[in-house]
Image (tube, rainbow, N blue to C red; front, side):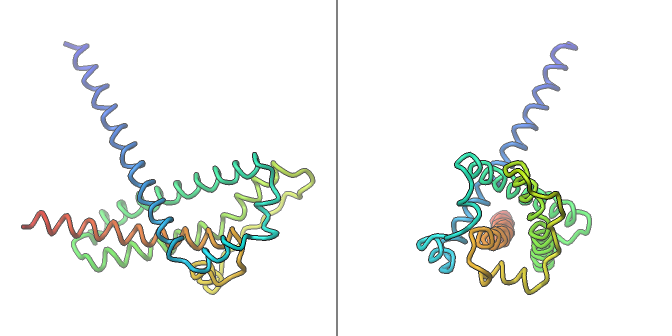
Length: 196
């Protein structure tokens, strides 16, 4: 009996792990779908991609360096999206704002903007640290700085210098905002369907 109880506990633990893994995979799918939609709806990005990003530092890296940069970017995107989803659930379950759809959406959008602003302010340091491993002789320094509201809006609107980095940062913010709206629309539709 003790063995069956222990195996049942292990089985329940595995189910919980699979549930969390499934949630993370759905989050990744939604995020990359939102990134694709944001990219396709951004003429500035599509024009820059079609003409190329001449002189962009990403193109000066070796293929292995570029692959590492892509992997680092994907990991950061997934981490920030997962952190946003977790913070959103914790915040709104604690504040009980989920009963008011408008407050919930506005609060979640505000959370998304603040988290993206912080992430984009600190991201240069993460990438500079990666470049320290790739290039000899780079000085160890702090390159992160908090973005002004104007700089943040220029990134989101893709109005800044047409670099691959700035365009991807803007697309990421747009995608996370789009994903946030999609989650709330889906929740509202599910609630509406349940009330019928």
